[in-house]
Length: 262
Ligand code: NDP
Image (cartoon, rainbow, N blue to C red):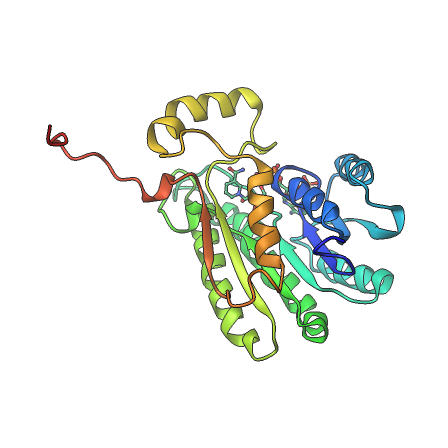
C-alpha cells in the first residue's frame, strides 16, 4: 500500500528536474499522475521512468502544453478530470529562473511573471472547483529567490515572492473548503535548468562556501518535501507555509570580523 493509492495528482513541469523527480516518488507511493510540460520527448522519458518504477499505463496521463497559455491550463485540468474522474492534488512546479536585472524590458518581466506566477494562479482557478470536491490540496514550487532579494534574477525573484504571497492568500481563502495550500522553496538543486558543468562551478564557487550543508541539493530531496505537503495525513495542520529546503543557505550570514573565543 502506498500513501497516495487512489489519489490523482497533477505535477506541472514533470518533463525534467524537480518535477520529474517528484512524479517518480509520488508514483512509487501509489499516485495516479498527470505529467505535463512542453517537451514531448522528455515527457515520454518521464513516463518510461514511471513505468520502470512500478506504475502502470492506466495510472499515467501525458498532457503536452504550455502553462502560460490559458487554453492549455484549462485543457490540463479538464483532461485529467475526464480521464481519472477527480483531482486530489495540484503540484505547481513548472517555472524557470531567467537571469536578468531591472534594466531588462517590461516584455521580459511579463514573460517571467507569466511563467512563474500568473500560470500558477490560472491553474489554481481551474483546479479549485475539483479540489473542493476531494478536499484536496495544492503544493507550489517557489524558491529561496522569493525570500532573498536576488538582483541577478530580479524578475524571477519578484515572481517567486508573489508566489509566496499567493500561497498565503489561497491558504486563507480555501481553508473553509478543506483545501490546504503550501509552498516548498528550494535552494540550488542540480537539475536540467543548467548544464552539469555550470552546476559544478556554482557548487564549488558559491554553494559550498555559503551553505551549512555544503553541497547542492537533488530533485528527490525536494520530492520528499512535496510528498509530505501533498499528503493530508502527514501535513494535515500545515497550510499557507513556505518550507525552505536549501541546506541552510538562506539562514547563513556574512561572518563578523572577530573570530570565536579560544
Ligand atoms: P528544469 O529546467 O529541470 O525543469 C523545468 C520544468 O518546468 C520543465 O519540466 C519544463 O517543461 C517546465 N516548464 C517551464 N516553463 C514551462 C511552460 N511555460 N509551460 C509548461 N512547462 C514549463 O528546472 P527545475 O526542475 O530546476 O525547476 C522546477 C521548479 O523549481 C521551477 O519552478 C524553478 O523555479 C524551481 N526552482 C529550482 C531551483 C533549482 O536550483 N533547480 C531552485 C529554486 C526553485 P518543458 O521544458 O517540457 O516545457
